[in-house]
Length: 315
Ligand SMILES: NC(=O)c1ccc[n+]([C@@H]2O[C@H](COP(=O)([O-])OP(=O)(O)OC[C@H]3O[C@@H](n4cnc5c(N)ncnc54)[C@H](O)[C@@H]3O)[C@@H](O)[C@H]2O)c1
Image (cartoon, rainbow, N blue to C red; front, side, top):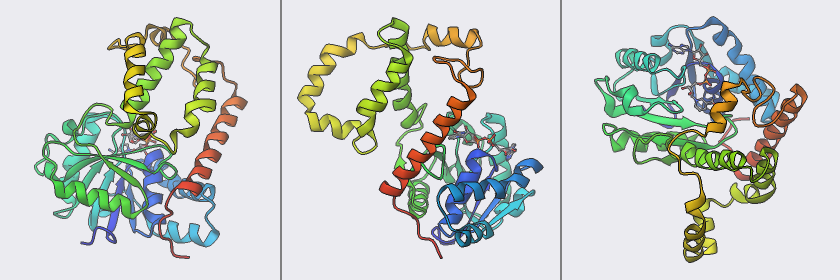
Protein backbone atom coordinates (compact mmCIF):
# COMPACT_ATOMS: atom_id res chain seq x y z
CA UNK A 1 0.00 0.00 0.00
CA UNK A 2 1.23 3.51 -0.83
CA UNK A 3 1.28 5.69 2.31
CA UNK A 4 0.60 8.84 0.30
CA UNK A 5 -2.53 7.60 -1.46
CA UNK A 6 -4.06 4.64 0.41
CA UNK A 7 -7.18 4.82 2.49
CA UNK A 8 -6.96 5.96 6.11
CA UNK A 9 -9.25 5.37 9.08
CA UNK A 10 -10.13 7.49 12.08
CA UNK A 11 -11.42 5.84 15.26
CA UNK A 12 -13.71 8.23 17.12
CA UNK A 13 -15.83 10.88 15.37
CA UNK A 14 -15.69 13.58 18.07
CA UNK A 15 -14.06 16.98 18.06
CA UNK A 16 -10.59 15.75 17.09
CA UNK A 17 -11.79 12.85 14.92
CA UNK A 18 -13.84 15.20 12.73
CA UNK A 19 -10.85 17.53 12.24
CA UNK A 20 -8.44 14.68 11.48
CA UNK A 21 -10.89 13.10 9.04
CA UNK A 22 -11.55 16.36 7.22
CA UNK A 23 -7.83 17.19 6.99
CA UNK A 24 -7.05 13.84 5.33
CA UNK A 25 -10.12 14.05 3.07
CA UNK A 26 -9.46 17.67 2.06
CA UNK A 27 -5.99 16.55 0.96
CA UNK A 28 -7.57 13.96 -1.33
CA UNK A 29 -7.44 10.84 0.87
CA UNK A 30 -10.26 8.33 1.26
CA UNK A 31 -11.26 8.23 4.94
CA UNK A 32 -13.41 5.86 6.99
CA UNK A 33 -14.50 7.05 10.42
CA UNK A 34 -15.65 4.56 13.06
CA UNK A 35 -17.64 5.56 16.14
CA UNK A 36 -19.82 3.32 18.32
CA UNK A 37 -22.16 6.23 19.16
CA UNK A 38 -24.99 6.89 16.70
CA UNK A 39 -25.14 10.58 17.65
CA UNK A 40 -21.45 11.08 16.82
CA UNK A 41 -21.78 9.24 13.53
CA UNK A 42 -24.91 11.12 12.52
CA UNK A 43 -23.49 14.56 13.29
CA UNK A 44 -20.07 14.03 11.69
CA UNK A 45 -20.85 15.16 8.11
CA UNK A 46 -22.52 18.37 9.36
CA UNK A 47 -19.58 19.20 11.62
CA UNK A 48 -17.09 18.51 8.83
CA UNK A 49 -19.09 20.73 6.49
CA UNK A 50 -19.17 23.61 9.02
CA UNK A 51 -15.41 23.42 9.51
CA UNK A 52 -14.81 23.32 5.74
CA UNK A 53 -17.02 26.41 5.37
CA UNK A 54 -14.93 28.09 8.11
CA UNK A 55 -11.89 27.29 5.95
CA UNK A 56 -13.54 29.13 3.06
CA UNK A 57 -13.97 26.02 0.88
CA UNK A 58 -16.33 26.27 -2.09
CA UNK A 59 -19.52 24.20 -2.45
CA UNK A 60 -17.74 21.89 -4.90
CA UNK A 61 -14.78 21.41 -2.55
CA UNK A 62 -17.10 20.71 0.38
CA UNK A 63 -18.98 18.10 -1.67
CA UNK A 64 -15.76 16.45 -2.89
CA UNK A 65 -14.30 16.30 0.61
CA UNK A 66 -17.50 14.91 2.14
CA UNK A 67 -17.70 12.30 -0.63
CA UNK A 68 -14.32 10.94 0.45
CA UNK A 69 -15.51 10.33 4.04
CA UNK A 70 -17.46 7.19 5.00
CA UNK A 71 -18.93 6.88 8.47
CA UNK A 72 -18.96 3.33 9.88
CA UNK A 73 -20.63 1.61 12.82
CA UNK A 74 -18.33 -1.39 12.37
CA UNK A 75 -14.64 -1.18 13.26
CA UNK A 76 -13.46 -3.95 10.91
CA UNK A 77 -15.31 -2.37 7.98
CA UNK A 78 -13.72 1.02 8.70
CA UNK A 79 -10.13 -0.23 8.78
CA UNK A 80 -10.09 -3.21 6.40
CA UNK A 81 -8.12 -1.39 3.66
CA UNK A 82 -6.46 1.36 5.71
CA UNK A 83 -2.68 1.87 5.57
CA UNK A 84 -2.90 4.33 8.44
CA UNK A 85 -5.30 4.44 11.40
CA UNK A 86 -5.61 7.27 13.94
CA UNK A 87 -7.41 6.66 17.19
CA UNK A 88 -9.20 9.75 18.59
CA UNK A 89 -11.44 8.08 21.18
CA UNK A 90 -12.07 9.27 24.78
CA UNK A 91 -9.00 9.95 26.91
CA UNK A 92 -9.19 6.74 28.98
CA UNK A 93 -6.43 4.16 29.12
CA UNK A 94 -8.80 1.17 29.20
CA UNK A 95 -10.75 2.46 26.17
CA UNK A 96 -7.60 3.11 24.15
CA UNK A 97 -6.02 -0.23 25.07
CA UNK A 98 -9.23 -2.00 24.05
CA UNK A 99 -9.29 -0.19 20.70
CA UNK A 100 -5.64 -1.05 19.95
CA UNK A 101 -6.27 -4.71 20.84
CA UNK A 102 -9.31 -4.78 18.52
CA UNK A 103 -7.39 -2.97 15.77
CA UNK A 104 -4.55 -5.49 15.85
CA UNK A 105 -7.05 -8.22 15.07
CA UNK A 106 -8.64 -6.51 12.05
CA UNK A 107 -6.17 -4.16 10.30
CA UNK A 108 -3.94 -5.33 7.44
CA UNK A 109 -0.33 -6.25 8.34
CA UNK A 110 1.88 -3.19 8.10
CA UNK A 111 -0.88 -0.69 8.84
CA UNK A 112 0.32 2.07 11.16
CA UNK A 113 -1.71 2.53 14.34
CA UNK A 114 -1.56 6.05 15.77
CA UNK A 115 -3.07 7.42 18.99
CA UNK A 116 -4.09 11.05 19.40
CA UNK A 117 -3.92 10.93 23.20
CA UNK A 118 -3.32 14.29 24.87
CA UNK A 119 -1.48 13.07 27.93
CA UNK A 120 -1.63 9.28 28.39
CA UNK A 121 1.86 7.87 27.72
CA UNK A 122 1.87 6.06 24.35
CA UNK A 123 3.95 3.37 26.07
CA UNK A 124 1.03 2.59 28.42
CA UNK A 125 -1.52 2.48 25.59
CA UNK A 126 0.54 0.10 23.44
CA UNK A 127 2.23 -2.00 26.15
CA UNK A 128 -0.12 -4.97 25.72
CA UNK A 129 0.02 -5.06 21.90
CA UNK A 130 1.59 -7.97 20.07
CA UNK A 131 2.84 -5.60 17.31
CA UNK A 132 3.80 -2.42 19.21
CA UNK A 133 6.47 -1.66 16.62
CA UNK A 134 3.79 -0.21 14.32
CA UNK A 135 2.14 1.93 17.02
CA UNK A 136 2.98 5.59 17.50
CA UNK A 137 1.58 8.70 19.16
CA UNK A 138 0.40 11.52 16.92
CA UNK A 139 -0.69 14.48 19.01
CA UNK A 140 -2.82 16.85 16.93
CA UNK A 141 -3.78 20.23 18.37
CA UNK A 142 -7.28 21.63 18.51
CA UNK A 143 -8.66 22.83 16.10
CA UNK A 144 -6.95 20.09 14.13
CA UNK A 145 -7.83 21.59 10.74
CA UNK A 146 -6.29 24.97 11.65
CA UNK A 147 -3.24 24.14 13.80
CA UNK A 148 -0.55 22.52 11.62
CA UNK A 149 1.52 20.90 14.40
CA UNK A 150 1.32 17.16 15.03
CA UNK A 151 3.77 15.74 17.58
CA UNK A 152 4.93 12.26 16.53
CA UNK A 153 5.82 10.21 19.60
CA UNK A 154 7.49 6.77 19.42
CA UNK A 155 7.72 4.28 22.26
CA UNK A 156 10.80 2.14 22.89
CA UNK A 157 9.18 -0.46 20.58
CA UNK A 158 8.21 1.83 17.67
CA UNK A 159 10.43 1.25 14.65
CA UNK A 160 12.12 4.10 12.81
CA UNK A 161 10.20 2.99 9.73
CA UNK A 162 6.89 3.56 11.55
CA UNK A 163 8.02 7.03 12.64
CA UNK A 164 9.25 7.99 9.17
CA UNK A 165 6.12 6.69 7.44
CA UNK A 166 3.97 8.61 9.93
CA UNK A 167 5.95 11.82 9.42
CA UNK A 168 5.70 11.43 5.63
CA UNK A 169 1.96 10.70 5.81
CA UNK A 170 1.28 13.80 7.93
CA UNK A 171 3.57 16.03 5.85
CA UNK A 172 1.77 14.74 2.75
CA UNK A 173 -1.54 16.21 3.95
CA UNK A 174 0.02 19.58 4.81
CA UNK A 175 0.63 19.11 8.55
CA UNK A 176 3.85 20.08 10.36
CA UNK A 177 4.94 16.83 12.03
CA UNK A 178 7.60 17.08 14.73
CA UNK A 179 9.53 14.03 15.93
CA UNK A 180 9.52 13.73 19.73
CA UNK A 181 12.44 11.44 20.50
CA UNK A 182 11.05 9.96 23.73
CA UNK A 183 7.59 9.30 25.16
CA UNK A 184 7.87 12.00 27.85
CA UNK A 185 4.88 13.42 29.83
CA UNK A 186 3.27 16.32 27.94
CA UNK A 187 5.38 15.54 24.84
CA UNK A 188 6.88 18.92 23.77
CA UNK A 189 4.04 21.39 23.20
CA UNK A 190 2.26 20.86 26.50
CA UNK A 191 5.52 20.94 28.48
CA UNK A 192 6.23 24.38 27.01
CA UNK A 193 2.66 25.61 27.31
CA UNK A 194 2.31 24.56 30.93
CA UNK A 195 5.72 25.92 31.94
CA UNK A 196 4.30 29.29 30.85
CA UNK A 197 0.92 28.74 32.53
CA UNK A 198 2.62 27.68 35.79
CA UNK A 199 4.54 30.95 35.98
CA UNK A 200 1.48 32.97 34.89
CA UNK A 201 -0.56 31.47 37.76
CA UNK A 202 2.35 32.01 40.14
CA UNK A 203 2.55 35.72 39.21
CA UNK A 204 -1.17 36.14 39.97
CA UNK A 205 -0.79 34.13 43.21
CA UNK A 206 2.11 36.37 44.30
CA UNK A 207 0.07 39.51 43.44
CA UNK A 208 2.57 40.92 40.92
CA UNK A 209 -0.25 41.71 38.45
CA UNK A 210 -3.84 40.77 37.61
CA UNK A 211 -4.83 37.77 35.52
CA UNK A 212 -6.12 40.10 32.76
CA UNK A 213 -2.78 41.91 32.69
CA UNK A 214 -0.89 38.61 32.34
CA UNK A 215 -2.83 38.00 29.14
CA UNK A 216 -2.20 41.56 27.96
CA UNK A 217 1.55 41.09 28.49
CA UNK A 218 1.43 37.99 26.29
CA UNK A 219 -1.04 39.10 23.60
CA UNK A 220 0.38 42.62 23.19
CA UNK A 221 3.96 41.57 23.90
CA UNK A 222 6.07 38.52 23.17
CA UNK A 223 3.02 36.53 22.02
CA UNK A 224 2.94 38.73 18.91
CA UNK A 225 6.14 37.24 17.57
CA UNK A 226 5.83 33.67 18.86
CA UNK A 227 4.04 32.46 15.71
CA UNK A 228 7.03 33.34 13.56
CA UNK A 229 9.92 33.30 16.05
CA UNK A 230 10.24 30.35 18.43
CA UNK A 231 12.15 30.55 21.72
CA UNK A 232 15.25 28.79 20.39
CA UNK A 233 15.67 31.14 17.41
CA UNK A 234 14.84 34.06 19.73
CA UNK A 235 17.54 32.98 22.20
CA UNK A 236 20.04 32.87 19.35
CA UNK A 237 18.78 36.23 18.10
CA UNK A 238 19.49 37.97 21.42
CA UNK A 239 22.57 35.79 22.02
CA UNK A 240 23.15 32.78 24.23
CA UNK A 241 25.37 35.02 26.42
CA UNK A 242 22.50 37.43 27.13
CA UNK A 243 20.15 34.47 27.65
CA UNK A 244 22.61 33.11 30.23
CA UNK A 245 22.79 36.50 32.00
CA UNK A 246 18.98 36.75 32.13
CA UNK A 247 18.60 33.20 33.43
CA UNK A 248 21.27 33.83 36.08
CA UNK A 249 19.31 36.89 37.28
CA UNK A 250 15.77 35.53 37.05
CA UNK A 251 15.43 31.73 37.16
CA UNK A 252 15.82 31.44 40.94
CA UNK A 253 12.67 33.56 41.41
CA UNK A 254 10.40 31.61 39.03
CA UNK A 255 7.96 29.00 40.32
CA UNK A 256 9.78 25.70 40.68
CA UNK A 257 7.24 23.84 42.81
CA UNK A 258 6.73 20.32 41.42
CA UNK A 259 2.97 20.50 41.98
CA UNK A 260 -0.04 22.62 40.96
CA UNK A 261 -0.36 26.10 42.50
CA UNK A 262 -2.45 26.40 45.70
CA UNK A 263 -4.35 29.23 43.95
CA UNK A 264 -5.40 26.83 41.18
CA UNK A 265 -6.52 24.24 43.75
CA UNK A 266 -8.49 26.95 45.58
CA UNK A 267 -10.33 28.03 42.41
CA UNK A 268 -11.28 24.46 41.58
CA UNK A 269 -12.30 23.79 45.20
CA UNK A 270 -14.56 26.90 45.11
CA UNK A 271 -16.21 25.76 41.85
CA UNK A 272 -14.65 28.66 39.92
CA UNK A 273 -13.98 26.49 36.87
CA UNK A 274 -13.58 29.20 34.23
CA UNK A 275 -15.95 29.33 31.26
CA UNK A 276 -17.87 26.31 32.60
CA UNK A 277 -19.01 28.24 35.70
CA UNK A 278 -18.65 31.82 34.38
CA UNK A 279 -15.70 32.56 36.64
CA UNK A 280 -12.14 31.32 36.96
CA UNK A 281 -9.10 33.57 37.03
CA UNK A 282 -11.46 36.12 35.45
CA UNK A 283 -15.25 36.52 35.05
CA UNK A 284 -16.87 35.48 31.76
CA UNK A 285 -20.31 36.25 30.35
CA UNK A 286 -21.64 34.05 27.53
CA UNK A 287 -21.16 37.01 25.13
CA UNK A 288 -17.52 37.42 26.18
CA UNK A 289 -16.90 33.71 25.64
CA UNK A 290 -18.46 33.90 22.15
CA UNK A 291 -16.35 36.94 21.31
CA UNK A 292 -13.13 35.12 22.32
CA UNK A 293 -14.13 32.01 20.35
CA UNK A 294 -14.75 34.11 17.24
CA UNK A 295 -11.53 36.09 17.69
CA UNK A 296 -9.43 32.92 18.05
CA UNK A 297 -11.05 31.22 15.03
CA UNK A 298 -10.65 34.28 12.81
CA UNK A 299 -7.05 34.72 13.92
CA UNK A 300 -6.15 31.05 13.32
CA UNK A 301 -7.75 31.16 9.90
CA UNK A 302 -5.78 34.29 8.94
CA UNK A 303 -2.57 32.70 10.21
CA UNK A 304 -3.31 29.52 8.30
CA UNK A 305 -3.94 31.46 5.07
CA UNK A 306 -0.73 33.46 5.50
CA UNK A 307 1.69 30.88 6.84
CA UNK A 308 0.64 27.34 5.96
CA UNK A 309 1.16 25.22 2.90
CA UNK A 310 -2.33 24.40 1.66
CA UNK A 311 -2.68 20.69 0.76
CA UNK A 312 -3.35 19.79 -2.86
CA UNK A 313 -7.05 19.80 -3.60
CA UNK A 314 -8.96 18.78 -6.67
CA UNK A 315 -11.31 21.50 -7.88
N1 LIG B 1 -10.09 18.22 22.53
C1 LIG B 1 -8.83 18.59 22.41
O1 LIG B 1 -8.47 19.78 22.47
C2 LIG B 1 -7.77 17.55 22.14
C3 LIG B 1 -6.52 17.95 21.62
C4 LIG B 1 -5.57 16.96 21.35
C5 LIG B 1 -5.85 15.63 21.63
N2 LIG B 1 -7.08 15.29 22.16
C6 LIG B 1 -7.32 13.86 22.41
O2 LIG B 1 -8.07 13.33 21.32
C7 LIG B 1 -8.91 12.27 21.80
C8 LIG B 1 -10.35 12.58 21.44
O3 LIG B 1 -10.71 13.80 22.04
P1 LIG B 1 -11.99 14.63 21.56
O4 LIG B 1 -11.83 15.99 22.16
O5 LIG B 1 -12.18 14.46 20.11
O6 LIG B 1 -13.14 13.83 22.33
P2 LIG B 1 -14.70 13.76 21.98
O7 LIG B 1 -15.38 13.41 23.24
O8 LIG B 1 -15.13 14.96 21.22
O9 LIG B 1 -14.79 12.51 20.96
C9 LIG B 1 -14.58 11.18 21.36
C10 LIG B 1 -15.38 10.30 20.41
O10 LIG B 1 -15.03 8.94 20.66
C11 LIG B 1 -16.21 8.17 20.58
N3 LIG B 1 -16.00 6.92 21.28
C12 LIG B 1 -16.42 6.54 22.51
N4 LIG B 1 -16.00 5.27 22.77
C13 LIG B 1 -15.32 4.85 21.66
C14 LIG B 1 -14.69 3.64 21.30
N5 LIG B 1 -14.63 2.60 22.13
N6 LIG B 1 -14.12 3.56 20.07
C15 LIG B 1 -14.14 4.59 19.23
N7 LIG B 1 -14.74 5.77 19.53
C16 LIG B 1 -15.33 5.89 20.73
C17 LIG B 1 -17.29 9.04 21.16
O11 LIG B 1 -18.58 8.61 20.73
C18 LIG B 1 -16.89 10.41 20.61
O12 LIG B 1 -17.53 10.64 19.35
C19 LIG B 1 -8.66 12.17 23.29
O13 LIG B 1 -7.65 11.22 23.52
C20 LIG B 1 -8.16 13.56 23.64
O14 LIG B 1 -7.38 13.59 24.81
C21 LIG B 1 -8.04 16.20 22.40
